[in-house]
Length: 112
Figure 1 (cartoon, rainbow, N blue to C red):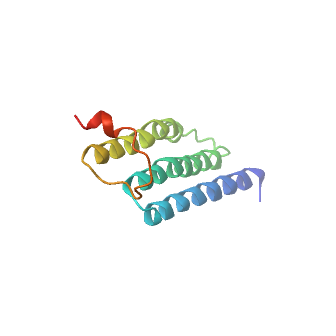
Figure 2 (cartoon, helix red, strand yellow):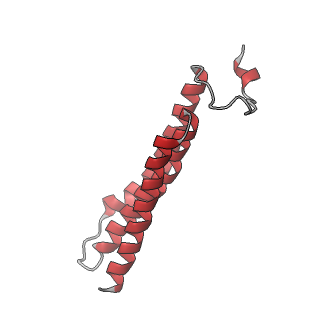
Figure 3 (tube, rainbow, N blue to C red):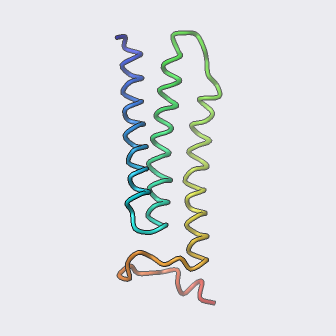
């Protein structure tokens, strides 16, 4: 096994781990806000790690995958932003929080 394949394997394992954490978070967390946080953060890191592994794997074959490299910053820009927008939409439509003990600082702003 070459060094290139070992590095690729490490990045694939990291990506699979974070993607699995994201899936577990979406299934297990109690409300839409927590679920979107899990989906927006850890899945971004997981998919980016897998894309980086793909890029590293094809370096010895002299294939420069510009599209794979462009996916990584695009994903870092869009995935957390879409999770934020889903959370904001849920909040404005009155989706309740999972616990009543959480202080809602935005409640006064959107009551009007």
